[in-house]
Length: 167
Image (cartoon, rainbow, N blue to C red; front, side, top):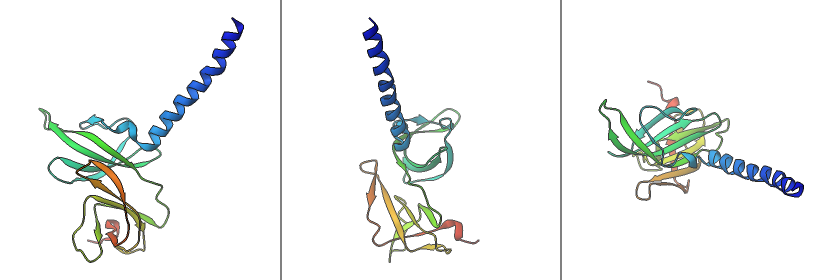
């Protein structure tokens, strides 16, 4: 009997540690939000920072938790009787830490030589103090077909740092 208790007491903390590791990695990856349905209220600890529509049913939403900045790829579901829009999270992009001297380009990336923004592209680039961001370090596309984020090449990408545009 003592041997069983000793065995259980040794194995149980390992199982707990394994479960904790899984939930921590889910928190870091943002996977726990995929499939989430929400209306006006976001989950506790999540703050809305901005977003935009890609089309009449898909949108990108920048949210923050204590530790991370995330981009949620959402799908419009319906409006309730009060007119509140309800969405479902299709995919989550957890952004890497944005270093000093870098800026998030959210909705204002474009290909060099093309004067049209590509709203599907999110990038992190060097903040050179002007509205034009010539060097994008890393970028992703919100693929409307697969409804997933995908890493893309930064070759020929540039962006606009909206915080540097004066009225």
